[in-house]
Image 1: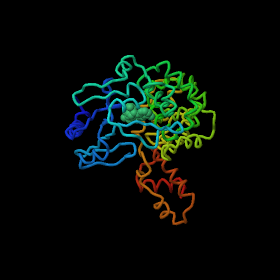
Image 2: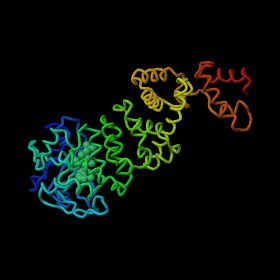
Image 3: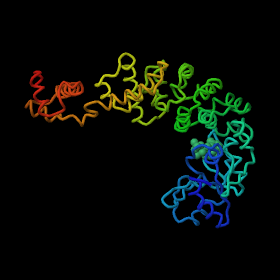
Image 4: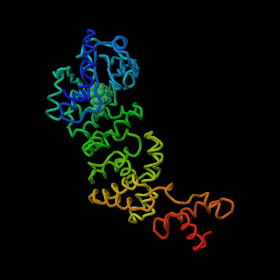
Length: 397
Ligand code: ATP
Ligand code: MG
């Protein structure tokens, strides 16, 4: 057994000592069997949340209604979920409340795909009633039980199936694939936030073009929020080397390919964080500039390193050119800038107001921009006295 299972082992042992069952489940077991990096370890147990709280001194309630608590051990949190069934699905969404059960198999049965329904005990032995290991070996995404029923119960699973395609490069088993087409329209019942969290993983995945093909073929794309509900955005992306692009780079690429002008509205529909929307819109402006001009010192400075790298990556991708060498050039160019941020400029607006002994106004901002350009072009050194003399010599003050 290796990390991160190792640090979670005492949790399982303590639950067992108290007379209950406990297993590793979900994505951690799947990723372990695939030899992939493991993110968070999930533990399933026959103990109820109340029983767990009697075992562990430090716990945090995160989703008691769904049977999940976090057990804190040595400053680290572990998600522990009581075996449960999700009986009453309403409106094609996961249920508001659940029933706790005492048998592992019942808990595994409510899970979405067979590869996600494997449990592992503390010795590494597997409980795999739905042939999840076979699915992993065959690289197949297969629903636990009837695909028709499972997608109707919770339509988010439509997106989850496709995000696993993007992350793992697996194929969809034929009944599962057929059902995605049949129930695509049910995605309308799912909250944007839940769709978004799967979409982010689709956009990040190395097999995203396989995922896009399924979105297109199944018609599921039509029920996504705007931007990715445009057929052309998905179809056009297929012609480019996007496999190594990350989520942000994919948003920018999609905004560039989109026929819709209102980028703000498109991004807001996905309920992306305001800060991320701001970054993407700025990047889109710089991408438009980049298409017509090479980077100037001033544009690099204005964009900042992160946006410049984002823009350059997408720019080279849409040119069908290799990304790495150009991104390195941008980084090197940025490293050489005499100033890299506004607060590095040797003068401030207050200095200008003092020197001019005049009331403030738009001229302050304009003059600062002139100074920044001059410093970046090395027309003047980034030094207060020299800048003051340069302003006077140019007749700017
Ligand atoms: P990741 O590595 O991205 O965390 P994961 O498979 O662990 O992938 P989670 O969302 O963390 O995904 O869910 C943990 C487990 O809970 C899944 O492996 C699956 O067994 C189950 N699960 C999650 N969401 C659903 C769902 N909508 N329907 C059924 N089972 C689900
Ligand atoms: Mg997980």
